[in-house]
Amino acid sequence: MNSLGLSMRDLDAVLDRIDAQEKPLGTKRTHTRRPFRRPALKLHIEQPGGRSTVVVAGRNLSSWGLCVIHRSYLHVGTKCTVDLPLVSGGEKSLSGKVIRCIHREGVIHDVGIKFNQKINLNDHDRLDQFSKWLPTLERVNPAALQGSLLLVDGSAADARLLRHLLGETPLNLVVVGSREAAVQRAIDGFDVILTDYSLVDGDAGQLMADLLAKNIATPVIVATAETDPAIRAQIGRLPATTFVTKPFEGAFLLRVLAEFVGPEITKAGPGAQALAGASLTAILDDLLAEALKIQSTIATGDCEAVRRLCVTMRATAQALNLTPVFAAADLAVNTLTGSMSVDESAAALSKLVNACVQAAGKRSQAA
Image (cartoon, rainbow, N blue to C red; front, side):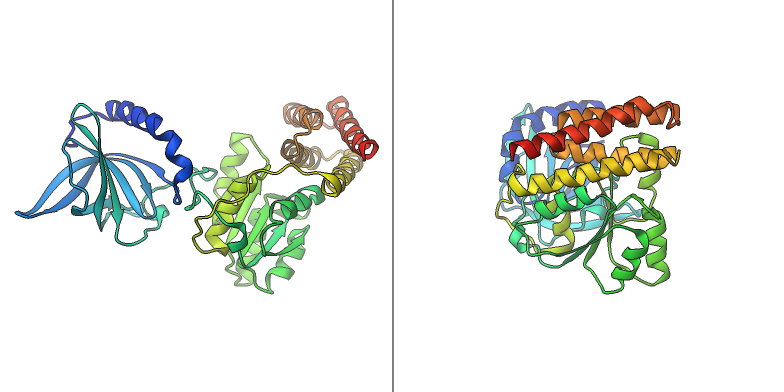
């Protein structure tokens, strides 16, 4: 039991109130604070009369510090050591000092502790594979992302969109559309590989097996537009370094990539920028090509192949704010998932293809 004598339910209620009060401060942080609600953590406090040990409750954790709640005030500058549980078992003692102590309510004090050295968050906290708490940094300077990235994606529209999102970075980006091509290029050496789960000649799991067979240890990020929980769970079991969802969010993607191709930067990264002019025209041309690909795949009767194309189309349309295309793609995915028949989904697929044609046509007229 912690020093507050709170049950986990009562502790959650207290922390919910504290978190709600502090939300406006979030954008000022450099390092991501990951929720780390633990009912009992041992905190060893160095005091003039010697060392004392108390049991505190965890609130959140970052790569450089920990927030806990305690029933007493702790002076700023107080040296301390906290025993943090490890995902692999056991504990690790981390030394630091108190940098903040704020009275919240009743006897509850919110205590901020800064570690003397940086930690690996994933050593202490196991996350849902698609959790957006993964990146260490809250903000990233795109100019600091220097290195090489291999993108494996059969969607020309998604590849072009990624190029746009990374336009302010000096990253060396190489794009391939298949598993086979990815293995051939990966031999050249890259800092990180970003691959869609569904590829024209297999999937991300097979790609990682191919890389392992050739002793290529490049970190792999798996992306997917799938929203079905069962499929996500299947993807989450792959031995990838991490996972991201489509459509890509520019600022979040930079934060993920910074884990592999950039030092810690505190300058604010770019916000979401609307595509315009030639960039949008080119992506809509790619979108039209994807629609034609769906048409040709329909003729094969391969329901799963058609569904994968529609899932990709849905994510791309969402990223571009093409509401009619997104709605048509979402309908097509749901219809295919429910019927598992291309023939029974013909009306929905036709609507999707027409929506793509209309979107490309309107943009051409506007240009």
